[in-house]
Amino acid sequence: MVKTAVEAGVVRAKNARQKRKLENEAPKVFENAKSTIFIKGGNVSDVITSVFKDLHRLKSPNSIVFKKKNIVRPFEDASSLEFFSKKTDSSLIGFGSHNKKRPHNFVIARTFDYQILDMIELGIGNYVPLHPSAEIAMGTKPLMSFAGDAWENELELKDGSKIDFKRIRNLLVDFFRGSTVDKIRRTGLELMMQFTLQEGVISMRSYKVIMKKSGQEEPRVELESIGLNMDLTIRRTQLSTPTNFKKACKQPSGIKEKNKKNITKDGLTGEVRGTVHLPSARQNLDEIALNHKKVMQRPMPEKEIDSEDEKEFDEDVEMEEL
Image 1 (cartoon, rainbow, N blue to C red):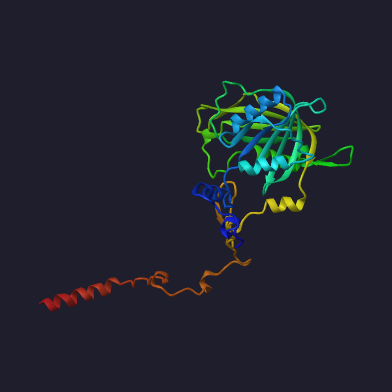
Image 2 (cartoon, one colour):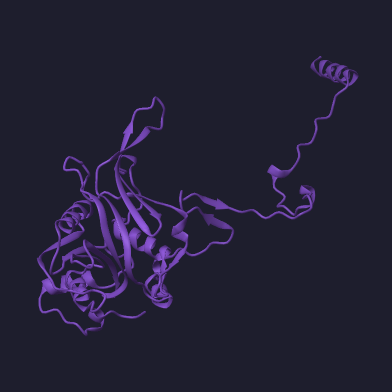
C-alpha cells in the first residue's frame, strides 16, 4: 500500500490544527463532498455576478465565492486556478469574466490532484435569475435531465478540433450533482435541472418539483419554473487525454465489492439475485444420492385385518377371561 506524504513523514504538522488539516486533505477511500469555488476575473458583468450568487445559493454549503477580482486567463495559464483549488481544497471551479470579445464569459473546470483535468468556456445568453421567493433547502440534490441525441456525438470546429459532448455532459453532472448519498427521501426531490443540447447551444432550465395529492398511493408531480435559466454557447474546451481521465476515474480496491459466483446485484434497486444452473435433461429425483434419513423414508402401509380374524381374536380373549 502506498503511503501518503503525511503518513511517510514528509509533511510534518507543527500543531494539532495543521495535523487535522493535513489529515482532512489526505486521500481517503470515501472522499469528502466536492467543494466549488467561484472566482471573478479582472472585469465582470452584472450577469456573471448574479449567476455566481444563484449557483452559490443552490450549491451551499459546499461552495465559496471570492469577493476580490483576480486577473486570470485560464486557457493561457491555469496555475492561479490550481493554486486557489489547493488553498481551499476544492476540486470544482467556476470562473467568470467579461470583455468585448467574449461577453458574459463563464468557465467551468475540475481538477485532479490539484491539476486542471477538464475545462470548458461558455457564453451566457438569455439569462433569467433565480426567483427570490423560490424555497430550495440547503444542500438539495437536483434531478438532472439531458435531452437531445447530440449528447452522444462529437462536433468538429473550423480549426479541426472536436468537441466531445459526452465529456461535457460528464463535467456538468460532476459540477451540479452535489454530495454523494446512499438514500434520499421522496420529499427531498425538490429541484430539477434540464439541459437541452441543440445546434451547439446548451439550454439550461431549473424547476421546482411539487408533489400534490392524486387520490392514489403515488403523488401527482408538477414542475414550476423558478428561474436560473440560461443558454450556454460553447466557445473553447480543454479536455484531458483518455489516459489521464482513466487515471482520475480509478477507484480504490476497498470501495469495490468482490464478485460472488452466480450472485448479481441490481445497481439501481439494490436487489440481490441468485442463479441456479440445472442440466439440460430432466432430473430423476429417485437417482439422486441423498442421505437416508427418516424424513426421506416412505411410511409403511398398515396391514388390513379381515373381519373373521377379528372374531377369532375376540373369542380367544373371552375364553381367557372365563
